[in-house]
Image 1 (spheres, rainbow, N blue to C red):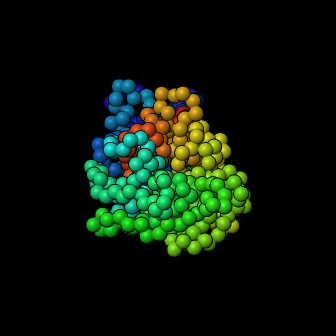
Image 2 (image 1 turned 120 degrees about the vertical axis):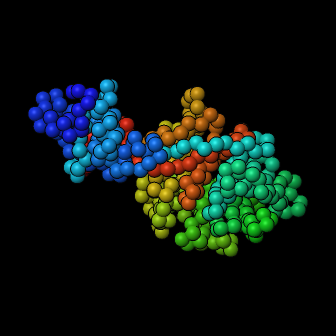
Image 3 (image 1 turned 60 degrees about the vertical axis):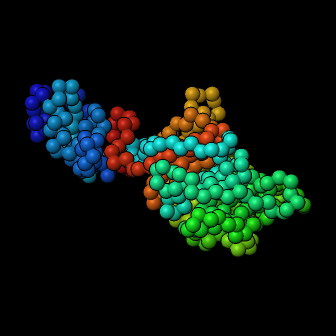
Amino acid sequence: MASGSNLYDVLSKSASASSVDVEHGLNDEITLKDVHCISCQRRGRRAKAYYYCQDCQVGLCEQCGNLHVKGVKMNRHSLSRISETYGISPNQGPFPELTEIGTKKFDVEYSLRGSTFLPDGELVVTDYSNSKIRVFSKDYTRKQIASMLVPKQNKWDEKRPKPMDITETGPRSVAFTTDTGCVYLVSIGLTMVMAVDRVIPVISFESNYGECLGLAYNDADQCLYISCSSDREGVYIKIYTLHGEVVKIARENITEMPNYLTFGLDKTKLYAADSDSVTAYDVKDFKVLEEYDELQAQTTDIFVDKYGYLYTLATERRLFKTPGSIYRLNSSSGVTKVAELNSKPSSICYNMKTGDVAVTFLQSRYIYLYKLKMRTFQKQVGTTLTKYQ
């Protein structure tokens, strides 16, 4: 094929192509949902793909397709028109993609245990080492704009409670668990003054010993879901109103303590994760809907993005160069690693509106910031396309 041939000549010659060309798909008409021209995308423009290069496995608009086959190295690539006949396999995308946008150093000793975004984009973290709640601005400088020392539940307590998991409960309010078996509800004023509105004693250490760790807020029923474990009652999920009233205690189908909780997009599905598996429950009757038990690493937190994909923050079990990772779980394509971390992570949070992702660490004074965006071109996996079932 001459390098000066245009795309029309390439496709017209495919009618008399050899059997080898047919194997490569020159005669196939391919359809790819939501595929855009990768060349235009790299130049900051958006154009719908009109052709598909099976060698590069990328979409191309009409103009970029002509330029693609004129190159000396690519003039023998197999190009196909996009139609409504064939599609990409489930593991080829489009998928959300994490892009690192910066890191932030905080003045703490060692450990940040929990993190959450307020709806307007402000970041709130639990400083486990110093028993503090810290609030950082919504711009990418992430300057500290407020902090609060966690008050003692009783004046005679020797130690100050350590904050652990945290979740937003409204535009200017958060809730967090502590190592004393309590949940604190805190409001954040417009002047950045933080005040404790209520303390919910989830587990009474006077009658038994246990802990509450995972925490999630469902704005559909305006209730807090708290994962609990105690020596007398076993493992369960306790549901409270924001006024501190017990709504329900769920024990059915819960065999391991779910350390981390998050809700699906429609708020009818609750994802509960322990270190080895993630289980999706129906919020009404806690019937098991999905279960992921073949995870490649030890889970330390979970979240669901605005596209409905479930992610796990994980600590690698083996001695890799990267001790932490972020994985995407999909019932059809399995587990996919989307980011590698150079320290052991402790929590992850996601902002639906801005697409920002923040990752905290157990023994690092840094927070990693990411932007989560949907890929508009397909992932380069495999060498062939498969029909939609």
